[in-house]
Length: 310
Image 1: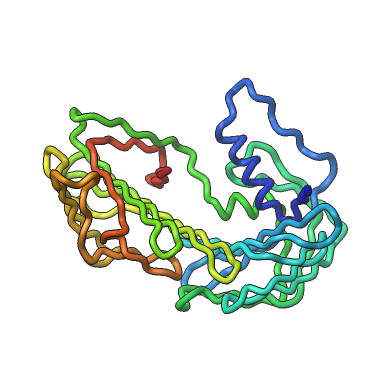
Image 2: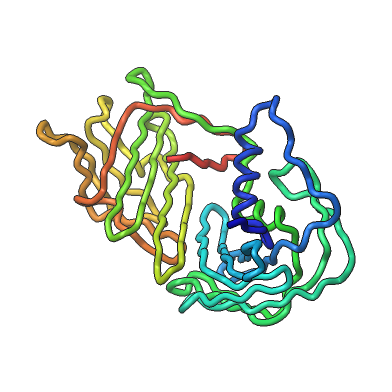
């Protein structure tokens, strides 16, 4: 069954992947003639978080679809995707303890053109205002937002603001000749997926980290991600990368130690190290966490923003 973007979260994900991965010889995506429907809306939440709302619906006219509410701040964000009743002029969704969305679009009849970050062509859309009730309560009070009115924005603008945009490139090289190290970790305990990566390009260099958490609660899909830079002392490893210790500052807490045993398939990673994502804190050390450590060098593009796939 085909789905039509009202705010375009799924379609835009495909477009973004195409734009980033396509070769120079690939044909540019065709842009539909005339203005697109308004894409969604953005709000300011508490504690410095920005809130964006995106949704899409089935093309069969049933109104069944999904909504994604994303709370982002600097180098961290959390996205919540839930079932919704969506039309070209309304969004209705219940998010349990996280809140609700009951908004109706009042169109202006005027057309505007914007140039969203990360995309290479302008987008035309019909302006308007969403009116009704919007409530969002981030777990543990990390952010919240309330609104009865919000200006409509185009779909590409909502999406590009939600994912961010890094104009540089990143990569890694490996081998015993590299003075740096990379520690990778993954855990599937408690029905959720935690991934993290720690890098240093030499023993005295800064520590670079990125992490993600994917889970499902009460029918709502939740994805959280953060990245940043910590002092050199946050990550130590021996020259043969057989042992390592971690003790980064917030959003981490506690410490962890990596050791290797002759009888173990993978290194042991023990300690009380935790990491606080927006709305949730998880353990990064213990029996359910699988790690690897190897010589590596991380390269990244402009701006100092580090985003490393794991």
